[in-house]
Image (cartoon, rainbow, N blue to C red; front, side, top):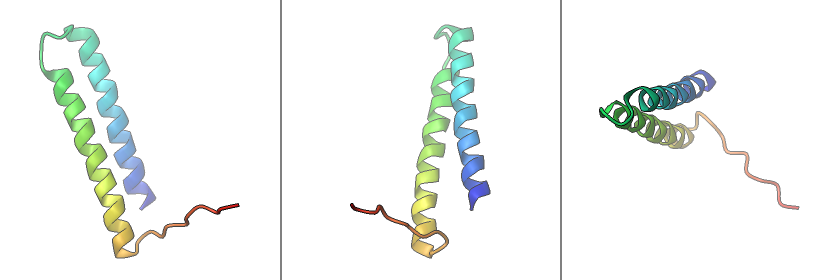
Length: 68
């Protein structure tokens, strides 16, 4: 489970970094920055849905917060 989440985070960070590179190189001339940010949003939503699904299936357990 941790490997999947770590890989997803690395993909999100990589997509964000590539968007920054495209933004600096293209100066807004192409849609590569928008495409990279769209991929980042898609990966973020997929990771969120995967965590919800994993919790529903019982693969991960919520610990909750301790109220004091």
